[in-house]
Length: 567
Image (cartoon, rainbow, N blue to C red; front, side, top):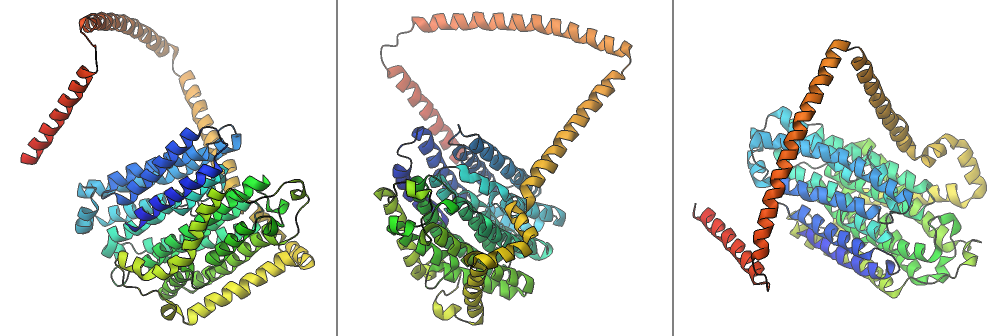
């Protein structure tokens, strides 16, 4: 219910925002068609009571995202990005479907309640395979390592689509699936001991890598995309610490961070849409001085910065602190250190965006442009999310009660030694990284020189795309070519006698099939013409016949339903 309300609320806000953002675009019928299906599909996904229904909506949101990413289909990069997103998420979809089929073959039902009550009947090998296949499906959908690269490419979509994609739909579906799977497998997670640690480590490494990539890119939408990848990593890490038999603390922490992230990331994308519409570029190096030209946008961006970095009393402070506490309770020192480092880098890249876009001097590029605020309807939608970013922190306990988890959320409950370490890592670590790498030119050059290999790795996105395009894709092409060559050489080695007999048989078969097809077509044509001549003799002076036919059909359906209920 919480997620259904979240999805439909963001759908409303972003649809209103789209009235201003998409005002001058062509193909608006197609845009709103897919946006409304997107909202409905994601709502259906979280409201599904069985795996089969969930998978149908799972595929529908994939189709909608593909269609919306390629909305500007005249741009080759948009089409390429949509295909990339479609193919990479299909890897997860196939694995998810395989996991569902394995559970169904063991239990004979897709129902969540039935699976929960009978999960002990599933063989351990099937349970393990199903759990990891479902995990792969979630990893692909939520853009986690190593299937994360599609989300940055998806920034070719209209910014309103990106806002909905990141705040409440596509990338949150994988988090929802993991949370639902933890409740499904429940008490049997002890039998698959590597499942939860896998979720924990995937999320932790993704959080760190996403943060470092956000620190290195100059694309303002790219920073938001990598930030989403990183923040979802935090959610995965919290879910990976869940101990179903003793506590759902980590489970709740992950989902609370999902809620808080939806508000500040949705707000961030709405503001980015207004900036791009005004300055006509996504490159932050060409921006600067927008603090004076767009004061309302600047003020709302400060709220985004405070929320993303987790400053009290915003809800993201509580959600991040609960994530850190859940990871500390797991006793894994390396995971904790990586998440603290990711927190510091989050502050650094957020401060970098504020500096490059708003605070520093206006670039020569912007001096030629007439700068102005975004349209009022866009600022209105952004203002609603900004107000909720501030206010919703006071409703944490209500969210806890709605999700039936006994966790008290307040400053008294989270102020402890881990909170102090969190704030220390946030401010001191983040400021150190920012000042050393971006604010001091001489020092920045020295740092870049020392860490040149690291810079090269970050600029190329850890070479994931290069690996997929040059090794995986090229390897597939080579394998396909080799198989084709093998087929040709194999056919060439067949003795001529057998080859000639096969050709003669094929020609004779084709001749008889042609005769049969001609006779079948002739008979069907005659029958059709006879039926048409009879229909033409009937009177159709009004819509009465159509209405009568529809009523008869409805009556038949009602009779069938009643008979089924009587049985």
